[in-house]
Image (cartoon, rainbow, N blue to C red; front, side):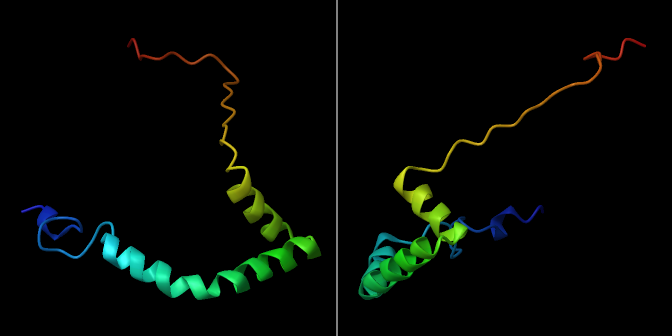
Length: 82
């Protein structure tokens, strides 16, 4: 046996995405804190704290796409012909 039945998200296990009802409950619990969260974000941005500014722009304009520069310094064969 490989233990896949013990993975989260399989029938009978509590795992995976929370139910919609749980999400709604969480949103209802967090809603009263919204003004405080915006105030804290505003204070951090006004102070010029990079993390707050970064978070603001990640949500406001979207996170920039990550790019990776892959450079090969020498020619390398794809297959070993030996």
